[in-house]
Length: 188
Image 1: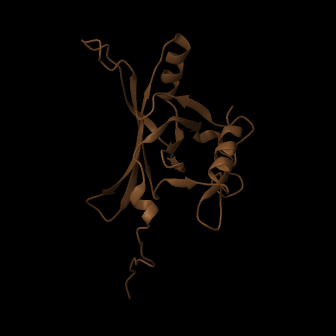
Image 2: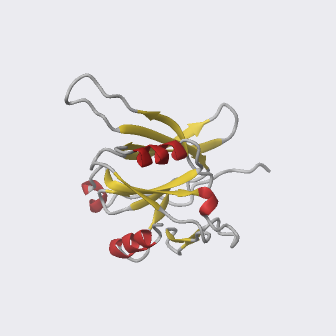
Image 3: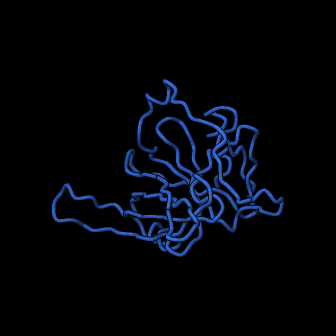
C-alpha cells in the first residue's frame, strides 16, 4: 500500500477577503536566525491553537531590528517551487527599498549581505507574516543607482530569499494592537 498526500479541508472566500488591500506597511523587522531560542523544541515560536505564531522566543542577545522605508515600496511573497524530482517547497521572498543616508546605514546593509535572517512584514490589512521563519532568508541582490533624472529611484533595493517547507507564518496575539505591541517590545 502506497503513501498518499491528501487534502483534509476546504477554503471559502469571505466578504472581508474580497476587500483586502495589497502591499505592505513602510515598517518591517528583521531578526537573526541565531538569535532564536530553539532550545524549547518549538523552533523559537509559540504556535497557538488557531495555528498563528503568538510569541517569539529570543536568546538573551536576540530580538527584532526595525527598518522603515516609504509606504508601498516593500513587498513580500511566496512561490511554490516544483522540482524535477519528487520534492516541493516554498520560496520566501522579501524585497525592501531602504534609504542608506549615512555610513552607519551602509554598515547595516553590508551586515545584511552576509546575515542569516528572518523577516516580519505588516500588510496594509493589519496582518503580520514571518518570512523565513525556520530556514531563514539571505540577501540575493542589493542594488542602488543614482539614476539619470531627478525622478530616478535612489533607494537601495534589497532582495532576501529563502526556502521553507511551510508558507509564511502568521503572527497574531489577541488583536492587531496586542500583536504590534509585542513586536515593538521585541525590538533591540
